[in-house]
Image (cartoon, rainbow, N blue to C red; front, side, top):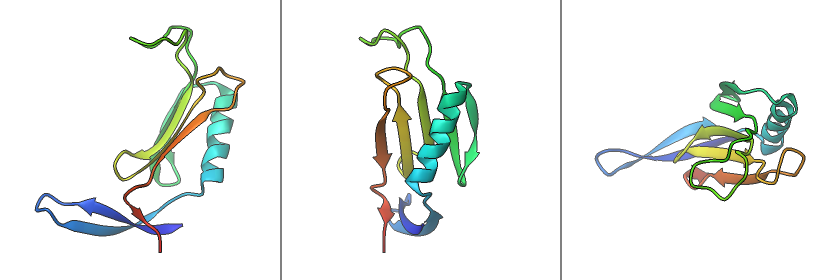
Length: 106
């Protein structure tokens, strides 16, 4: 989908920029494929920066978790961003977060 993105400028104006927003089902399919491989990956997907980090046995700093969950993210925070995290373990469904507050759909 091509949408407009609200981008604030330094002089307190808002710039409208056309951007390609990928279909979330296609993004989920990519995340699932990378998760099945279980190998770290970083690159570009659907025109956006993206990365996948596999689960690690050591817990995150200052966390009640007993391991570091696998995670996938795509986009740029504050513009358009989508992530998945396997917080309940490798075989459980992931939680998702979508930041599209600056996307204007017409």
